[in-house]
Image (cartoon, rainbow, N blue to C red; front, side, top):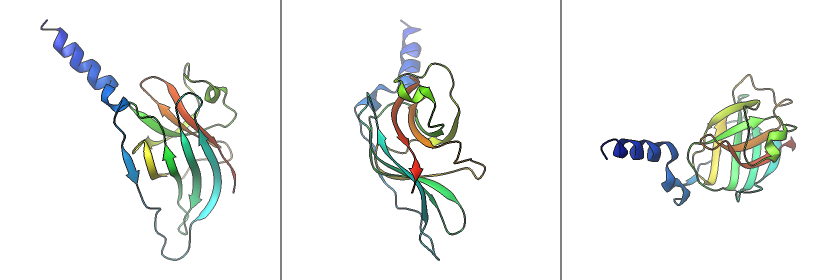
Length: 153
């Protein structure tokens, strides 16, 4: 009994089951540019095969040269440890619900919310000719929640 409580607490912390039932909405404004509107470079529609995922993923370049990903009209299932990643569009792992092993990706950060508009900065060194898809990915279960294959705007 004494060891059961820490084990249950550890399992709860690792898998965060309440996140399956609680939505977290974000309404982040697009980064403001003082001199010019940001330029849309790539865009794609987010879709999930097993998890209900929808919205648009667009990569913008600001007037100062910084690139960022904007998820707009976005919604997906909530879950523990969900991340936003740039991945290779041709990667076969994107067609599966569960990813077996590692796949080539660029981490953009933990998902800010499972609903709403949100922004993620891209690393300056990212090659957008190589990473042409966005994946909403649950680290805890190695599950793909949704994917957007990006096309030039």
